[in-house]
Image (cartoon, rainbow, N blue to C red; front, side):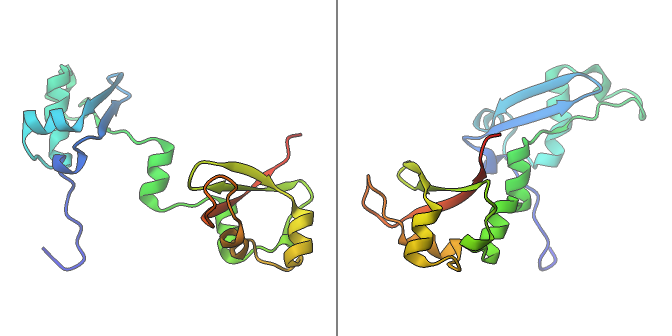
Length: 163
């Protein structure tokens, strides 16, 4: 295999995960357990497994013709696509770039989310008084103490006020 080439995913990568398939032409949308598929088909490569799944589902178009053939593909939710592609939200991008408190619009609010699950709205005025209006939002997150777990392990999110 050439250096830097990706190896195809196999069923062993999906043990304990859900495998979803879709074919709009055949009106098929099914979910399978990765562990069950591994037990049934062995450690098959994911691209080669689609024909077997179409046959197992009972699709008549999986073996007939060329142009009218079943177009069964793997289905991923929007969130899964974003995670696979490494996408980030516009707010996460702005924070990573170094958006400052002074750069926030009047309708934008700051919310803190701790790893323990606690959430809370931050007062922009008190943050500006304490750290200054030119403080970067990404630098404020490690300075926030959680009231529940007493750790400095928060993430700051930007959201808009409801209209």
